[in-house]
Figure 1 (cartoon, rainbow over the protein chains, first blue to last red):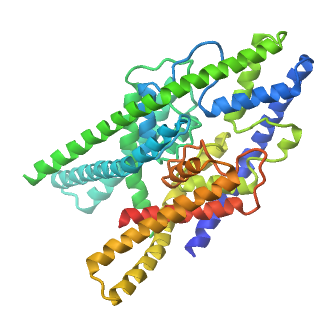
Figure 2: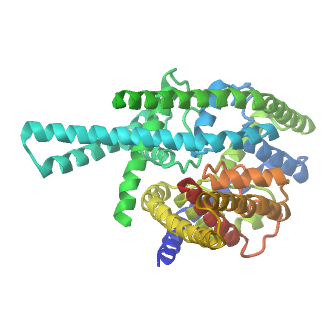
Figure 3: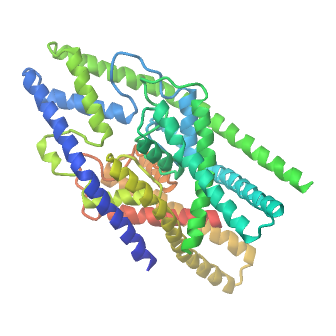
Length: 245
Length: 252
């Protein structure tokens, strides 16, 4: 029965997403094709195959994380800050993918690094989650003592904690992102959720816009947010699982 | 005293975690920096060479075209070939199904992702309920796999082996068969179907099953290759059981 429910759920999602995304995709493809042919038409000496090769070359470069815009020798992606962020994305299993190792040695190291890093990350997240839970229970006890409520206090505190967590980790950060990254609120929310759930598509990644300047504390604060946010979301999902089982 | 040592442990854990990250960052940087530089130079040269061959193409037009192309690639539209490619959609049902699977398992390759605001919001809520569902589901599958292990243990016990030895052997057996079935054999399979090297296959298998899912390697995305019709379904089943195996491994 569970199998059927699972497959059904995934199938349902597939259907909905298909309906939502297909039209936009067709439009984008047609738009690009139009430009392609326009370019070829405007410059009749431009040969189709040569352009094809160029396009393939650009796609290849893009997959390696290189965009060919302008003449500026932009900052390398594998500077220390970028590598640090990459390490985080590996052991939290977020795995954005906007940056990924292209050398064989880098990949082998990545596997080994993740092999020990992921359990380490899980242990740490568990610790943080436990601390959060203890803090909430502590507050509940204090409230019970001060106000002499009995069962109400526990429920109230738990709801309060859920709401604070929601605000702190999912609802407020998008505001920061729309200021620093220029995303819409909805995009910031989408990014927050995709990151904290460790899905990590990589379509939105903070601090990657070459046209923007970021304050020094930005990436560090975000890293802390990811850590605590993941622990909180893991707790929430644990409660969901207990509810399901 | 117990609380003190507990806090010390947590502190050590936090410190250890950050040290681990820093070490990793340094190593990655050392390994990848030079390769990146080379690729940048190669890409710039390619651009230069192209402009030189077609000198009446202005730089501005070129930049505009590149910008549009990059945007299209970011949106998952690879303009290789001609118009007939519009018919093949990234969002046909089988691809959407695969996508939904990567969301729910939190792998999240990212080669395919929702662009519309509606698609993104739906994705968030879909994952909110799908991820717990996935975890519960994997739990069940893992239990089925562990039953097999218990049967093996029982068989050995009846043959007169000591319990500790049985536990060790079953763990070893579970680990070894798992690595074979979920890492080594699939990589051979991918060599044939995707044209990757063996080490690329292992890398892909590991990144997928750990749910990191960078998306630099994804099945069924090579242009110009014919995949037999149940390829993706087969890969999906592999991912499912592989994830359950890993989950079980953590429980043991």
